[in-house]
Length: 72
Image (cartoon, rainbow, N blue to C red; front, side):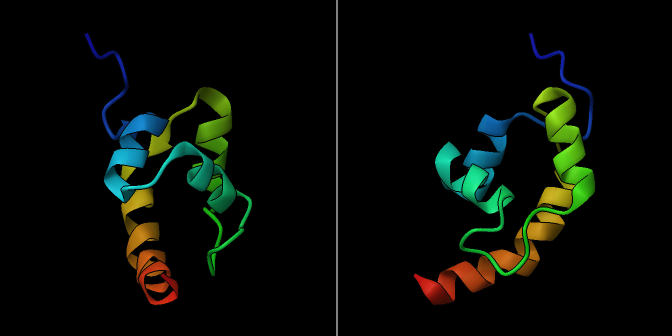
């Protein structure tokens, strides 16, 4: 049973959504390989309980994943 609060994702869900592995997610958290690291509200939610704010992750990906595709 999934007890996660509505509107939050676990790291595995973020990996599936962004189609990358955990190592890449954590590199992006540090700002490596992306124009903009994850903003502080996302970082704070992650530190507090390994949860990601879903709508913020989606918004971040729309701004940054296009950059990733150009680099790849």
